[in-house]
Length: 90
Image (cartoon, rainbow, N blue to C red; front, top):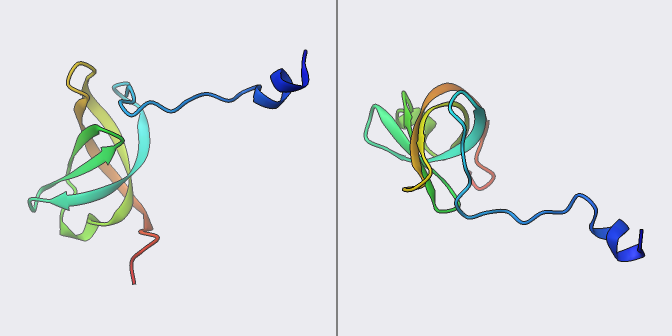
């Protein structure tokens, strides 16, 4: 194994359209809400988060993916819990 191979072992590129599996639990930041559901973005992928109200905006939340369409890079998930604050909130 060359030095370069050793250095790059385990590296991979992130996709701007990540594939999400139904049932997977992921942590995301809620960007906005309509009062009953929020929207989170992972790269160019949009995830509607059911149950994410105003108290979840700009916070890190744990979501269970309930539906995902790879062709449109969009899906839905259900809010499980708020796990953290935004790194830029005052």
